[in-house]
Length: 315
Length: 303
Image (tube, rainbow over all chains, first blue to last red; front, side):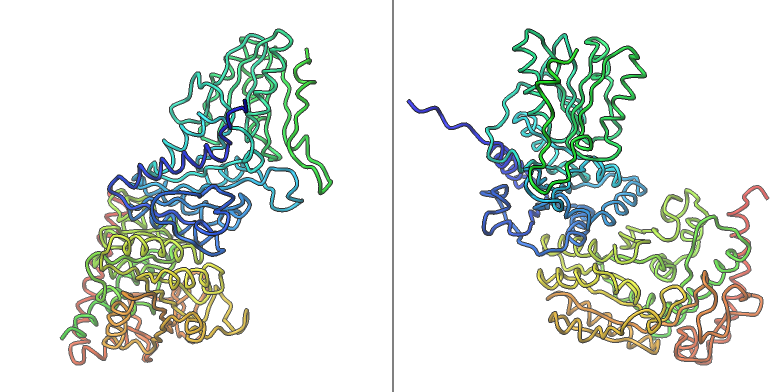
C-alpha cells in the first residue's frame, strides 16, 4: 500500500489564504488581492492558486503597490498584496515606514486591513542577492507586525486571524519549505497577539525559534527525545512589543536556552531574547545560532542549517 | 459673481498665511511650516471644484490648501501650535496635517509618497462605485521620483478616478529645474501613457476652476494630469528669485503683499474684485489685528 500523500507547507498556506479570503469576501468590505502574475503562470509559485474573488495582476513597482494598499485600507477596503520576494519590499520601505508613522499619529485605528504576503527565498541557491530574510529588520523599521509561520496549525491560525484584520502587517512564507510536508505540531499555547506560539513543553531545554527555524527546532527536540531528554519549543514572530516572559520563565525552569534565527540581522531579535533571559536568570546556559553566525561567502548552498546534533548533545 | 467670491477667498487665504508668517518670524511655532504664498488661486479653485466625497492627498507645502478647505483660520493655526483643538488634534503639525472631514485624508512630508496612496484611495472609490474623485498634489521635485511615474502607470492601468496636480514652482529647495535635472515635458510623458494633461498658468480664477471641474469630469474615465505653473515664496530657504520680498522680511504692517504680476494670485484676485478690492483688503487687514489677538490668546492663554 502506498502512503497517503502528505499536505505540503505550500498547500497548507495556500488553503489557509483561500479560506481567509473567502471569509473576507463574505463580509461587507471589498477585498483587493493583487500581485505580480497573481493569476498567471505559476501564480506566485502556487501561493495564489485557486484564491477566491477577483485577482488583480499588477506590474513591478512595490513602493506604489504598498502605497496603494495603504490608500485602500484608509478608505475602508481590505487589501492583500502578494510579493514574490521579501527583498522587493526594500523598495517599499520608505512608503511603509512613513505611512505607518502617519497612521499611528492619526490615532484612530483603520477600519480595514492591509497585509503583504511575501515569499522569502530561503531555499539556499538564490545567490548573494534576492535572498533577504530580515523580516524582523523590516518590521522593526516599519514598526509593523510580521509573521513567519512554519507549523501548519500556526500558519492556519495566523492567516485566519491576521489576513484582513484592521491595520497593516507582513506575512512571510518560506520558499525552502514549499514542497516539504507541512510540519504538524499541536499548539499548546499562543499569545493573544500571535507573536508567540508554544508547541512542546519539556524539562531539559527551552528552544526558541525566530524566522523560519521551527522545523529545525522541532528536529532538535526530536533528537533530544532520542537521548531521553525533553525540551520546550516556541515560535516567535516579529510582533512588537515583544512579550517573551513565557519563554524566559520556561528557560529559567529548564536552565538552558537555545535560540535559532534564520533572519540574518546583525542585531538579531535572538540577541534581545538572550539578554532578557540572562537578566532574569543569570545562571542559565545559552546557545544561539543565527544566520549571521552561519553566513557563507559562497554563492552556492546558503541555507540556514543549525548543527542540530551538536546542539542536542551540548551540556 | 462666483469668481468674485473665489477672489475674496484667495485674499483671505493670503491674509491667513501672512498671519502665520508673522508668527513664524516671532518663533511661535515649534514645528517646520511651509507657507504657500503664490498657491492660493490653485487651492481655492480646487476647493471649489471638489464635490461631496472627493478626497485630497497633499504634500508638505500644503498651507494654502488647508486654509482653503477649512475656510477658517483657527483650526489650522491651532494645529500649528500643536493644541488639542487643532485640525489634527495637535498631533500632526503642518507637513502631515489632514482634515478628513474636509476631504484631506493623507498628507505626506515625504516627496511622492502621497501619490501611490492616492491610487489606493481612488481604487477604493472605483470598487465601491462612487462618483468621487481623488486629487493628488505634487511638485516639480517630486515628479523626479519613481513614485510619480509608477503612479501614473498604475492609475492608467486601472483607470482610476485620480487627478494628479503638479505644482511646478521651478524649485526644489534652492535649486531651479535647470540646475538639477533635464526638463520633463509632462504633456508628452502623460501622453505616452495615454493620460490627458492640462496646463495651468496665470492665476485666472475662472479658468482654473473650469480646468479643475473639467479634469474632475474627465477623471471618471481614468487619471488626468495637470501641471500648474506657480511661483512660491520659499520661506524656509529665502526669497524665491523673481519675488520682490523674502517672507522673512514681510510685515503685515505694510499691508497684504500683492505683487503686480499675473504670477501672484492675490493680484489676479484684486483685479477680479475691481473697485471692491481696496475696501475688501482693508477689511481683511482689520480682521488681521483680531486674528493676531486670537493668536496671542491661543498661544499664551494665561496672558
